[in-house]
Length: 102
Image 1 (spheres, rainbow, N blue to C red):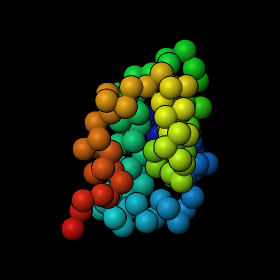
Image 2: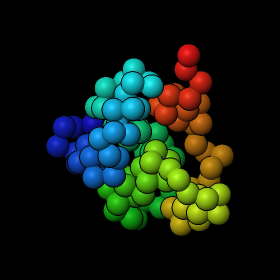
Image 3: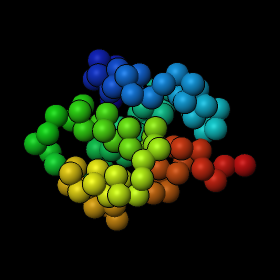
């Protein structure tokens, strides 16, 4: 991912500094590594490719990283984005979120 791709700016606009630092502590990844990992995961999810990828990435961050949404809201997110949750690499997502680390 090139430095000028804009995805780092999308991350900064969506994931607050406290959450970003917390994820870095939990995962051991730098912010740049977290951005790269989430971009790769996002790009492999498929979905509506006609939409603005940066808008879609910010939506992904809002629903998959920041969180705090109901089950119905998450289901609506997947539907509106044209994503089948079964196509998500949940092991990679858990790793990027720091779940299951000791």
